[in-house]
Length: 411
Length: 185
Image (cartoon, rainbow over all chains, first blue to last red; front, top):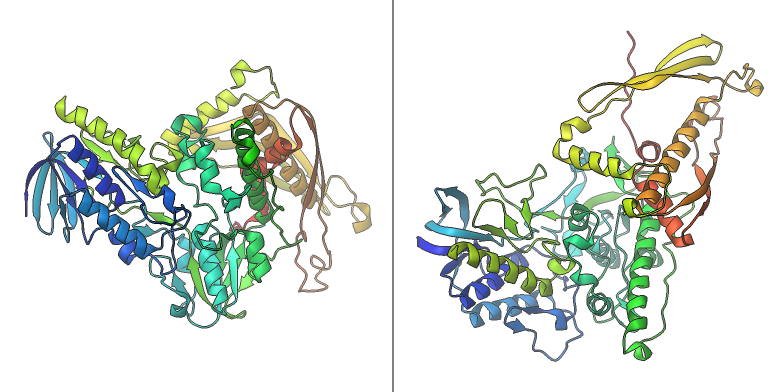
C-alpha cells in the first residue's frame, strides 16, 4: 500500500490512536502506520506481571474511557491491550498493521515515509512511536564477565527465565522494585543498586496517590511550572505498583522482605561491582521530595470543601539505610548469576532521516511541535504536562498537537 | 526569583544560570582541566601550588598563585609544617559542599546567616603502615555535620544540604571510583 494523505501518524499505540481520533474529528485525511499490531509494545515487549500505575478511572483517551465495574482497580497488560484494541475499533482508526517505517525524510514541503509495504507521502507527520522502544543500559554492562547473564525489562518476562543464583537489580524505579520483589519471591536472593529515585506511597490519607495528585493539580503542572524541564522529562518512574493489595512499594518494604540495598552501581572491575557512597543522600533526596509533595497535597486538602471527609495527614518513616552500606561486591565469589538493568528505556529513531535530534538522541520539540514545519511528536514524558507520561495525560497533549497541525495544514 | 528578593548570600545565581544555559548550547566549552604542582621539601613536608587551569576553551588563571604546605604531625615523627593530605581531602569536601549550599540557597531564595560544617573521618592506620592488608588505606567513612542558621524551615535546610551533595564535585570524587594514572618522566 502507498499513497498521499494530509497526515501520517507513526505508531498505533494508545497515543497514535488518540491522534487519529482527533484528526478524524477535524476531518483530516490520515493513515496510522504500525510496525506490528495495535498496542504492539504492550503485546510483545513487557513482562508478564506488569499492571498500570494508574487506577482504571484514569484510563481514558479522547472519546473513550474505562467502562468496567472496578474503577479503582489497575489494568493488567492483557486488559490494557483489549482496551486499546477496542479504542482502535470504536474510533475507526485507519491503521496499516505490519507496516514498518524504514525512513522518514522531508523534501520541498512533503514528507516521504518509506515502509516495508511501500511509500507514503504527506504534508505533516505525527511521531507516536513511543518513549520506551529500547532498553537504556549503561556502558557498565560491557565490563561484566561472560559468566553473568545480563537481562533488561525488554526481554524479561518472569523469574523462571533466570538461572538459579543471586540477582543484582540495577535501578530503583517502579520497574526495578517490582521486578526485584517478584524475583525475590521466586526464591532468588536479590540486591538492588539504588540511584536517584522517586518515592511515592500507593495510598495516602485513605485515597490513591494518583487521586491526590490529580485533584491537587500536580499532574496538570506544565513546562512553565518546573525549574528544569530536562530533569522533569528524565525522572525515573515513581516507586509504585498497581495491585489489588495496594501495597506500598518502597525501599523500606524491600528491606523488610530481606532484599539488600546498595548505592548506585558505578563500575565493575575484575568482577567486582563498585557502588557509590552517596546512597544515604539519594534516599534523603527522595524522602524530602516525597515530604514536599505530601505538604502540597495537605495544603490543597485543607482548602478543599471536602476537607472534613479526608483522613488525617500522615508521614512515612524515612528510608532506612545501614550505617555503612557496602561499596563493593565480588559478583562471582558471592554467587551472582544475573544482573538485571532496570535503568530505563529510550526511543528508537534509527529510521528518522531529519536533523531534529539533540546530542542525547532525543527529539527537540516545544510541547510536541518539532522545528521542521508539519512535524509533531506525542507520547513522550512531560511532553507538555507532568501527566503526559500517563494514559489520561494523552488527551490534552494530543488535542494541542493536532490543533497546531490543523492550523498548519490550513495556513 | 533572586532579582525580586532581598536574599543575598553573595552568590551571583543569575550569572551561574546564564553560564549553565550557555554551556548547554556549547558543551565543548564546559570541558575543564584542573591542575596543581607539588614539590617535595624535606621529610614528609611538601609544598603545592595552584594557579592555572583550563576552561571555556582557553587557559585561565586564578587572580594569584595559591600555595599549600602538607606534612604530618609530630606523633608521626614529622615536623608538622602543614596539615596532612587526608585533611586536605576533608577541606576540599567541606568547602565544596558549603559553596553548593550557598548557591542552592540563593537560587531558592533562602537567606543564610551562618553555615558551619564539622567533619570527621575515622581511619585505621594499620592500612597505610602495612600492618594488615585487609585494612584499606583510606577513610572508613566521612561524617559531615552541618550547623546552619537560615530563614528557612528545618526541612528546607535539609533539602539544601541534600541538593548540594547531589551537585558537588568533591562529594562525587570521594564517593565514587575514579581512574588515577600516575606517570614518571
